[in-house]
Length: 220
Image 1 (cartoon, rainbow, N blue to C red):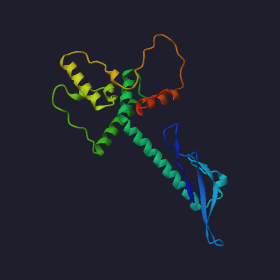
Image 2 (image 1 turned 30 degrees about the vertical axis):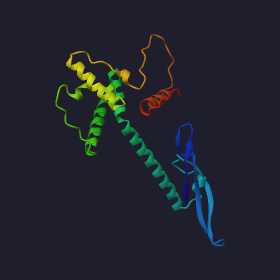
Image 3 (image 1 turned 180 degrees about the horizontal axis):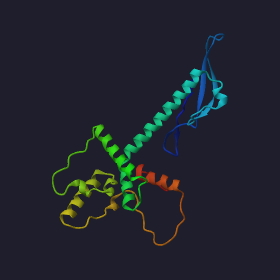
Image 4 (image 1 turned 45 degrees about the horizontal axis):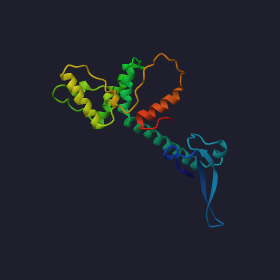
């Protein structure tokens, strides 16, 4: 059985997307016509895990295995895509999680949080990205870093941060908040006005666009 997947361009998203459905085709040899004939068994939702009964009843055991192989491959690709997205944005995710802690929010499970940090650290080490030795000198770079530093997007911004913070440490001045360097908008303090609670899903979707996808126009 052939499972036809026709990717389609999306002008709204500016990229290729998966189709809403896939077509199930069967090829069988027609002895009278002396050629293969194609028959359409039906269409199924691209993200479906199970086949509709009316289609499944038409399939041979091998054709059912063909469908299961498609589902396994689709789920594997989805899983790997999620892994890559999280790795690509791991620094920003950890930085925002640190911001939440600094603001007084509580982790769901502090023990699991430390376990996650240890597991990620071990994975970095095993992948060949062992932690570099501390640089000598005054002050130590690691002591200057915080969540805001991790949210800076360019090497120039990060170098400016290090130089600026080093100067403040040497001059014994208070460490400044350089959040104005960030390309993400700052959150204005509530001036006493009361606003309605907005849908959590909309807030998260817009926040992810701003934080991880570098979308300039976040009005939608």
